[in-house]
Image (cartoon, rainbow, N blue to C red):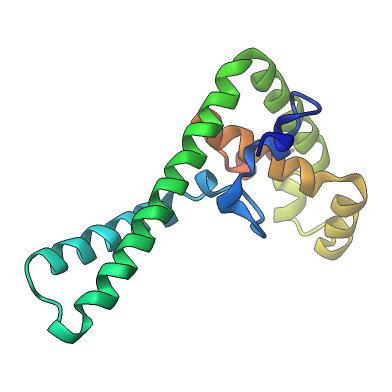
Length: 160
């Protein structure tokens, strides 16, 4: 993990941790998943505590609960790490977020073009890949989530 933090201070890879292996975005970018995970863990803990689990399954469920609690701690650590990274240079990260927003705004078709169907979606996707707009959108979403800001890129779409 120490190796991961070296390099460009605005390197988006700093937000990825142990819990994010093979994931498209860091765990803190999916608050709804974390909320559901926490609810399921609390429900499992409650059912074990109140004796609702069959006696022959108690041991397996306790092991499952232990694994879920460890995973929950890792998810919380991911969120804490992201806030710490942003706290190191909040103005720099805000500037980077604004740069990404401007690039996305320029690269996205306007609402009018989409509504009038004057844009070919397949050509637009190909252009987004070539210009690196998808990576910029991902970076915008990660920085926005870490800062606690709205991360929906559709709000950046021009009207005309």
